[in-house]
Image (cartoon, rainbow, N blue to C red; front, side, top):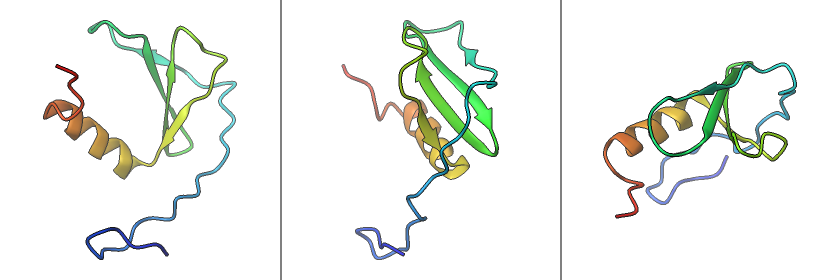
Length: 79
């Protein structure tokens, strides 16, 4: 298992290749982007709704939580 920069073990980075063909994609009615998410087999998939045939990012529940908390705290603000 790999270690993080602070010496704590990090989760195995391998994720399964999920079949997203039957996924129910959800979109937010707020904001200016077209980001869509789907909950599939215990993972969270995220894609660009303007390019639904393009790739999707796959998050574990812990990764998703870290992402959402970071977004709420302004970690990804571009301004």
